[in-house]
Image 1 (cartoon, one colour):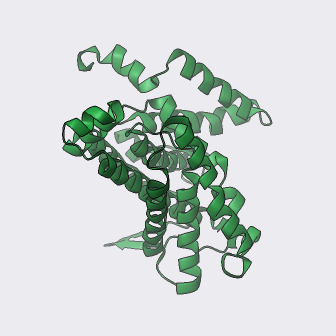
Image 2 (cartoon, helix red, strand yellow):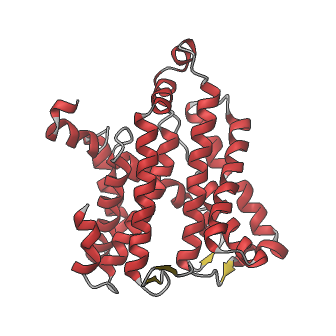
Length: 309
């Protein structure tokens, strides 16, 4: 943790190392949001729907209502949560592969609507000129997130810490035990008095909300969005891969995946194989899932902290 705090001062703040670790924080947040839902035993292939709605919600609220980006990001999260409610109403009786395929297909609905509603969403051209996050003043310190990479780094670190607390609460609290019971055996959970439908609804909406927050933040980080970018299969697959690699059942698993795979891909694989780095990335993930099916977090916990097993 100390290393993460002092990292911008150990490397060139304008350099790639600071930016890569900062984006690893972002993808860690996205993986934690996805994994929050997977704790209930469901695997989603459609979280890009929440991400894209959050991105477009925040960008369009900024464009048409001239609201503060900090407010529009929250509104984007609420838009994602509303779509999560629609998921729950529509898919609540589905389990396993049918549920995963339904979530994958559901991404196309908002994508097609946004792609064809050119008068409001700008269609396939996307939204450009999304404003940067406004500067914040903390006493004598001015945090300029658009011009100061270190300020943005610490903002993303704070968001990651908050998401980590939420994720850990969802695994260790009374609510977390209810989620675990639903994952292990829904019939037994219901027999113990747990409202299975309510628990799944709560965890889905929470995951959708935080994924929408990530989408809204993403738009303000890069300054432009388009349907093919924010509703892509890549957005749905990345948090799944990071969580699986790090370990879905460890509170730090998604973070471990993000801190390992993203920097390695950006700093090592791309330099070794500028064209085929994705193939090397995929090979590493496949080998990890074959030899460490519970993720690297579970393997490390088993061998480094055997007393906790």
